[in-house]
Amino acid sequence: MSTQAQAASAPAVDAGDWEPNLLVFCCNWCSYAGADLAGVSRLQMPTNFRVIRT
Image (cartoon, rainbow, N blue to C red):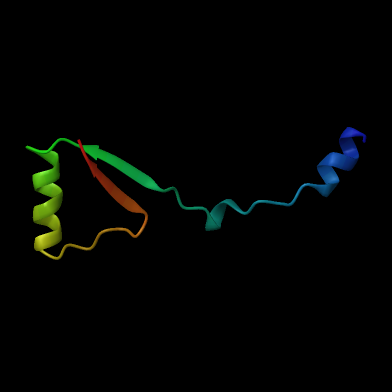
């Protein structure tokens, strides 16, 4: 298959619809406590935000 045929068959990606997934590693004693306080205070968090307690 030629390079032109491969480029023509590749779907176009619209960068405007792309959102990254945020994976946050937090220590138990400082960062996780702050994230927990933000949740208790009902601050709005993005839906693509995940916290892993280390």
